[in-house]
Image (cartoon, rainbow, N blue to C red):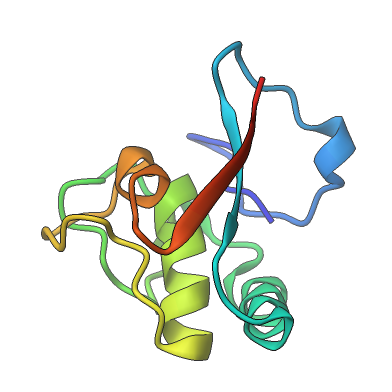
Amino acid sequence: MEAPGTGKNSRSIAGSSVKVGKGAVKQYVSTTSTNRGKAANHAFNKLRGKGYNSNFAVNKSTTGSKMNCSQLVWAAYKAATGIDLDGNGGLGVYPYNIKDSSKTVTYKTL
């Protein structure tokens, strides 16, 4: 699942077709495969087709009508499993909050 940006809706897409910049990291959430599956199913069934939310500062809603990239990942885990991936607990969840979370593990830097 991804929230590709302004003017586009969140969607399901093959990971192999996503282009990222140098220095991007690949991570997984340190939890059970059951929890990963629950989060993935929630994202696919409940968060797909939402418009893009450009507000990162106050985006911690699991049911918003719009989603940005970090919000979508955070909301899928929070709603489906109760796992909070926000590394600093602020009002908004940014990509670096998930990257720096104690619940995520980096396994590759591109």
